[in-house]
Amino acid sequence: MVQELRVFPLALGLWVVFASAGCGGDSSGSDGGTGVDAGCMPSASETRLTAACGTETHNCGVDRTWGPWVQPAPDPGDPEGLLGEAQFADRVVCEGSAVRYFRCGSACTWETTPTECGGGCDGTRRVSPPLEEEICVPGGAVEIGCETEGEDCYPRHSVYLTPYYIDRYPVVVGRYLECVEAGACTPLTTFVGRQSELYNDVVEGFPGAQIRTATHGQAVAFCAWDGAELVSGAQWERAAIGINTDRVFFPWDRPEPESLEYCVRINSRNCYCPSCGVTWFPTADIQTYTLSASSINVSVMWNYYEWTSDVILPYPTDGMVVVNPRYEQTADALPYEHRGWEVRWVLNASAEDIAGRDQTHYDGYPARGSFRCSRAAAGTINGGNRD
Image 1 (cartoon, rainbow, N blue to C red):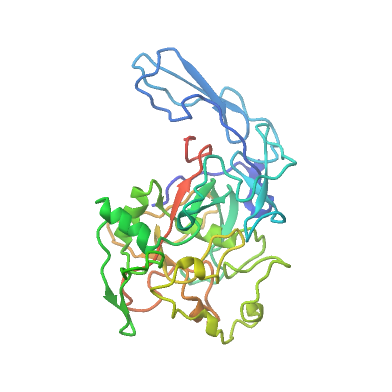
Image 2 (image 1 turned 120 degrees about the vertical axis):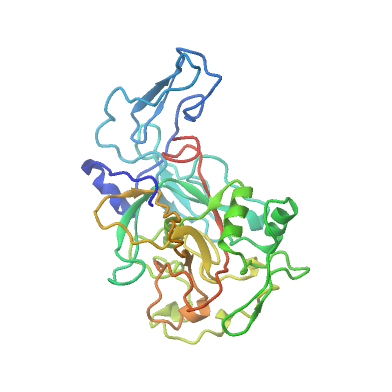
């Protein structure tokens, strides 16, 4: 099933294209909008902002629990943006590929001062240690999926994602071993690949190497232990699209003059790229691998198959805008998504697409992979401290 389905009013149709996404602001209410508090005082009330900068209130009942949020009046008309949204500003003063955003204040109007580098989300972004850094992905509508009928990513459609943090890097061996030592994760095991390669992640002395041997269950367990959840397919694709407003096929596609020279910009895509090999596995620190970073600095997005939380179900075709879609497992035991691919193969493939969501890519390929986690940014519409 698809979680958190919502149809946006026609008046908000301008948010369907990411380039027109709005901005973020603050929420009110001393309980942070949790909605349930066994210790509240009967007759007490709290008020907070709605997504469109109106107000809503809930009251504490005689049973000392909070009632539902109720909006006493319509939202103000024609907001410039919704809470939690932001728009690309620049990266002029930022190191690497970090970016700054413009957001809206509590009146849902654009601020004229950009955020700090890497900002754009409420809450606290994890910036250290380096291999655990998170990237802010502001809220807004974005088009995902592919345009070719019959593909697993068809049809192309709009979704709405509330702000979230995503791991800059895929989870590395050292981080995972901490989870094992805490008793929350099971040990990684080796497997033999399609070409008879032995895949062994736990190589002594190389804690910064990217994991490739995790099962889907292990990925889910790690993210839960880390206070997050396994990234959804829409979140992965949105992070890969980055600040681009045009159709992109790869995470590294960027507006000029930000384009990188991957085999002469991959104009033909059929090129020989010896630097794109995977000979660094399994011993190199993931930070030494610089290919396939997205335009918002979510790194190593196309280096090895990455699990998402979603099973491969058909995308909706009824025109409704889905908020924070997650496609849950059913009794049919459907395959889970694998996003991305090995960049050395992608550069020579004419059909690969950023929207691809194959579970294996190869028939009979073991159900293992890499993964990264996401975490709702506090103060968002449907995540963090806003229900």
